[in-house]
Length: 287
Image (cartoon, rainbow, N blue to C red; front, side):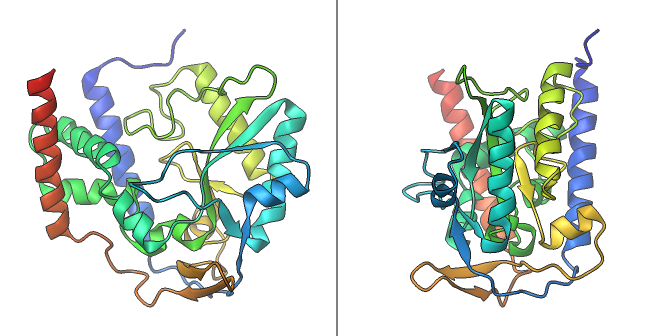
């Protein structure tokens, strides 16, 4: 028996419910105390090679001409490498899709057409017409972290991942690609098959065995020891990692003075919505 629901109203209701739950989570983590430890970053690729752990790394740009930065806090590296080793022993290969993001990366990612247009289209579908800017702003806060403190990649405490079969070379399919922006995006979405849900949960179990937590509203995102990680894990102590600027030459980090500031304000979002709607219209004309 399939668990996939097909009713459009069910899909729309689930999407809205999950996005609102994600927004509530963001509101809970924003006031959570962070005592930045000042720890530097470490190179995931170099660590995997040094430990003989087979890993894969995304070859795509994060946005425009910006290369992805496969770095994470030094204190998280041993556990991440251990996950990679655990997966190798199972016959899997961990693929790191993304790691640390600078302020510029996160800001521009929030306006990246492939990502932003998908969010606008889902908001249009949810709203039943051109979405109000406030709705897009609200959904983007969950899906592309428009506030530094909510963007755990900016704390160098998160990775986005995929997983591949070590022998066959095929992705361990989770019901959608990296990145999927739909009602299939939440970890426990009822709009993926039992098999694909099991893959998601098996991968999550291996990450959580090393104390990474999963972001409930994106099946590819895992983080640890930041405000979101503590809120999700129910840890009352202050988090160690907050959003930071990083100097790769000295490996020194500087905490953001404006960790609660907006990366893309509502006025900018309104402009981007207009551009997204124009791109959608142009696609319809040329289709």
